[in-house]
Length: 558
Image 1 (cartoon, rainbow, N blue to C red):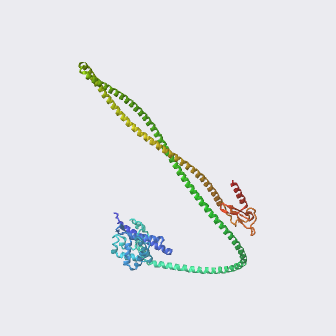
Image 2: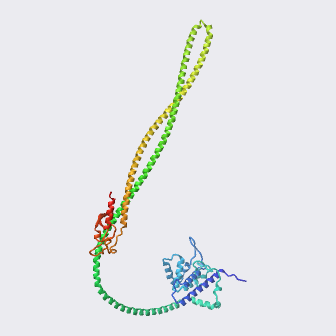
Image 3: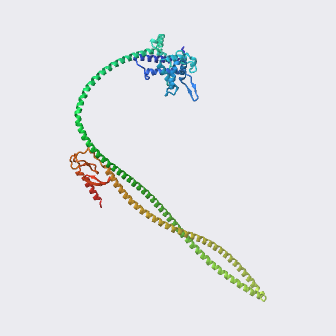
C-alpha cells in the first residue's frame, strides 16, 4: 500500500531543502572565490528569494478595510520587541525614504540582518516564541516548526507542492545524520568571521603589492622629471632668441590689425545701413501687399453688389412684363364691358320708347273711355260691346305694361351689376396706374443703379491700373532685393590682386570694395560713385558696374 503524503508537509520539506542548498552554495562560492559579496551576486540573490519563500509559507491573510493583505513585515516587527539589538535595524528601515510598502521594508530588514551577521539569532528568537507567531502563521507553517532555522519567501509565486527530497539526496547523503550535522555547522553565522579574516589577509597582501608598485612609479617619475628639466632649459634658450623676431612680427601684425579693424568698422556701418534699408523695403512690400489684398476684397464686394443689382433688375423687368400682360388683359375686359354697357343703354332706350308709346296708348284709351262714358248714356247698348272689347284691350295692355316693368327691373339689375363691374374695373385700372408709377420709379432706380455700376466699373478700372502700377513697383523692389541678396561681400583675406587690372595689393595700393558686386578693386579701378537701390547716396562702384548701371539708366529713360 502506498501512503499519501500531506501536501503541506511535502511543501515544508521542499522549502527546507532549498534553503539548505542555497546556504550551502552561498558559503562555498564565497570561500572558493574569497571575495566580498555584492548585492548583484547571484547566489546571494537566490538566498534572499528562498528566505522570502520560507517566511511566506503558511502566512495568514489579514482582512483590511479595502482588501485582503498578506505580508511578512508583521512577524519581522516582533523581533525588535524580543531582541533589543534589532531595534536599530527596524528604525533604519522605517526611516528609509524610498520604502513605502511592507514587502519592501521586509526585504530591506533581511539584508540589514545579514550584514549584521545576526539573522540566525533573530530567526531563532522568533521560532522560540511560537505563541506570538500563531497570530501571523497557520499551525502547519514552516516558522511554527523547529526546523525553521533556514527560511525565505518567493517574490512572485509559491513553490509547488512537489517532494524534492529524492532529487536532493545523493549517494554520499544516504548516511543522513553526518551530512545534516555538517550543514547545521555551516549554517552557523559564526563562520562569517573566518571568511572576513581571510578577506582581510588578502587585502593586506594586495596593499603591500600596491605600495611596492607605488615606490617604483615614484622613482621612474623623478628620473623623467630630471630629463624634462634639461629639455625645458634648452627650449627656454631657443625661446629667448626667437622672442625678439616674434616681437617685431607682433608689432607689424598689430599695426595691420588696427587698419583692418578700422576697415571692418566701416564695413559694419555700411552693412547696418544696408540692413536697415532692406527692412524698410520689406515693410514697404508688406504694406503694398496689404493694400493689394484690401483692394482685391473691395473688388470682390463691388462685383457681388453688381451681381445683386443685375438680379434685382431682372426681377423688376419680369414683374414689369407680368404687369403689362395684366394691363392688356384688363384693357380688353374693359373694352368688352363698355360694349356691353352700350348694348344695355341701347336696349334701355328702346324700352323707354316702348314705355312712352304704351303710356300714350293708355292716355288715348282713357280719352276714348271718357268719350265713351259721355256717349254711354246715348249709346249704352251699342257701346257695351265696344267697352268690353276695350276692357280686354286694357287688360292686355296692363299685362304688357307689367311685363315691360319686370323687363325694365331686370335691365336695371343688370345695369347695377354692370356698374359694379365697371367700378371694380376702375379700381383695377387705378391699381394698374399705380403699378405704372411704381414701374417708372423702378426704372428711375434702375437708371441710378446703372449709373452707380458705371461709376464702380470706372473705379474698378482705376483700381486695376493702380494695382498694375503697384505690381510693377513690387517687381522693381523684388529685383532690388534680389540684387541685394545676390551680393557676395568678398573678404579682404581672400583677395590679393585687383579684379580688373590684376595688380598686387600693398601698403601704397590699398583694397576697395565695390558696393554693387562686392568684389575688391584698387583705387584706380573703383574711382566711381553712383546711387544704388540699397543706398540713395552715391557710393563707390567699380568701372564695369559703373558702365552697366549707366547703360541701364539710359535704357530706362524714355
